[in-house]
Each structure stands twice: as C-alpha cells, then as structure tokens.
Length: 216
Image 1 (cartoon, rainbow, N blue to C red):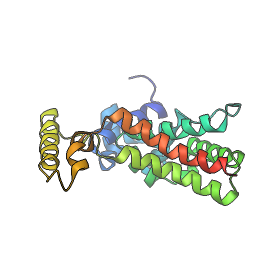
Image 2 (cartoon, rainbow, N blue to C red):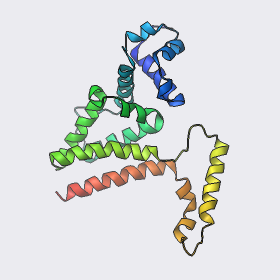
Image 3 (cartoon, helix red, strand yellow):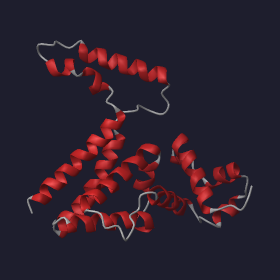
Image 4 (tube, helix red, strand yellow):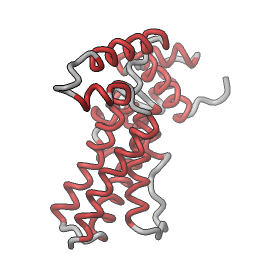
C-alpha cells in the first residue's frame, strides 16, 4: 500500500467499529488490517485515546461550521443538529466514540460546540440558556438516532420483517374500544418511516428553540 496516513487509519478504525464495536478497534487489529507494524500506527496515534479523538474529529469534520457563514441562526442551528443525526445514523459506533473521548480535545467538535453556543446567543438566549441548548442539541441528536427505527445491524431483513409483524399484530390485537389509537396507528408506531422520523424529530427540537427565541 502507499504511504500510511492518519485519515486511512481513522477510516479503517471506523469501519471496524461500525461492524464490530469499539472494543474490536485495537492498534494490533488495525496494523494487521492495514498491513503494517503497530509502530507505524503509533507514529500517528500514540494510544487508543488519541485514536478515538482522531475518529471523533473525522466524524464531526463533515459538518463543522465555516467561520464566514452568515446565514440566519435558524438555518445554521438546523445544520448542526441534522449533521449530528446524520453522523450517528451513518456510523453505529459514533455514539460510543463521542461519549468516550475528551470532547475538548477534538478540534472539529470544539468548532461545532462553539458555533452552537454563538448561535444560541445571537438568538437572544442568556449565557446559561445557550449552554443548555448546546447540550440539548447533542442529546437530542443521540436520542433521535438511537431510536429503534432500523433495529440492530445483526438482524437480517427477514428477521426485521418478522419482528415488525409480531409487534404490529400485538398492538392491533388490543381491545379497540379501550385503546383505539394504539390499534389504529400500530403500523407506524412499530416501524416509523426512517426519513420522516429523523426530519420530524429535528423539526420538533428546533421549533421549540425558535418559539422560545421569539418570546425574547
């Protein structure tokens, strides 16, 4: 292979993490997969903590804000939240990566965090409220992307279809006179449309922030 780069190491680590979990991401495993010695990886990342920081930086870099972005705060805050959700959806290991790293050591994360704080302030929120908004955005993204919309990666399409069928029938078999709404909406309750789930979740969170800002 050509010259080993930090990006190549991180991208391979993310592929392993997505498929097998972060415990499978080790320097020895990466060295084997990349066809190099462990020392070649230590040149870029001296330990797993630094590797995790590199993985987090790579994940967030795709939607880190441009410093000269002058769009309205609503649009930019939406981009932050949708970017987080997209990363968490695309990479199953992203949640664990972001939870395990020292976020203050990740440049891309610092840029997004700082931008979220500044956008909240520009919307008229106090310092304390802006800090809370920045935390709620991350937790909301995790909650939206963590929902059992796609089931687990280990489930085959056939297993997913059977799980959906059993859960749907379970709700539909409830007494309709007692639980009319559960019976009527059993299908989307068990398996919501993934795209609508994410976009509607983002809309709900941002609508709340915008409504509070309008009252300032």
